[in-house]
Length: 360
Ligand SMILES: Nc1ncnc2c1ncn2[C@@H]1O[C@H](COP(=O)(O)OP(=O)(O)O)[C@@H](O)[C@H]1O
Ligand SMILES: [Mg+2]
Image (tube, rainbow, N blue to C red; front, side, top):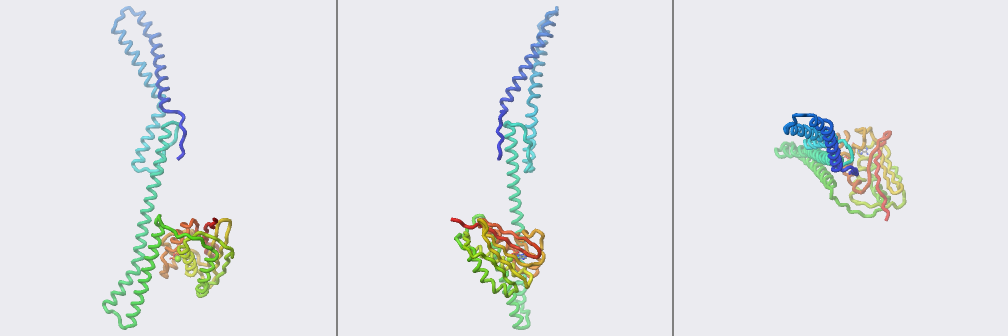
């Protein structure tokens, strides 16, 4: 928080105001006694103690009134500011978080207003953060329940058929079992992905970091995927520099990211088409770009694909994936101090992955 260095202390201001008010009221008293009371008493014949007391009383009343008026006049701005601060604190306490008080002057009240503004902003951020976490948690529970219920409902339905013996022959019985088996596999896959996502989202997730040659690692993984790409009518154009690109990574986790990118390319590419995989080292960054031809993406901002449970229509139709793959990838890349982003340009979907090159 930025602190204003306050030069004018309030106590000095108050003392000055008191002194000035006092001086003015004393001066007024002298003037009154000099020009009104003294001449009056001199000229008056029937002078009495009562008249004298009355005059003194009026004189002192005027002096005290003058003192109070001048003092209030001099400190009125500070009083109004104090009132504003007090009202603002009241509003903040009643839930108007984030509200700020205008900064005036350079004294302790300014400092107080500044501290209250800081507190109000901090409270607002904290509340916003907690509200967001709460919403995300609710959304997660809703999505998870929905995704888990779908295969579970089929499993229960088919098991019910088998239990009631509602099948005509052994073949139908076998088919039911096959469906139950595949739906159970899907359920397990969903639960595993969800478990992985929540595990990676926890703040104390630990990486098993080791130094790896990124070029060598990618060559190996792409090599393993080439037969699958070819079977899926994707011809791979790879450009991986043959130099040693050292990076610190948790290999097991990072391989998940590459596999998700490659599996997505297989699932969402137009076929037959090309798949471009390019790795280059630029200054202190290793940059991997995976590009495939695809239909127009389901959203304008393709970085929305990284949101959890986001699935395009095609994935939804085919009941493919969970929509957690890219969210998990993003989290893993960020744990490695890297960034992952997507861009869609002229029919090409590009995923760009950057992370720091490790220099000892
Ligand atoms: N290479 C790609 N080309 C086109 N669309 C993609 C690609 N990768 C991901 N997408 C879109 O992003 C969505 C989310 O991907 P992802 O998080 O991996 O989930 P999932 O693979 O489980 O559907 C996909 O459903 C798809 O619509
Ligand atoms: Mg995926």
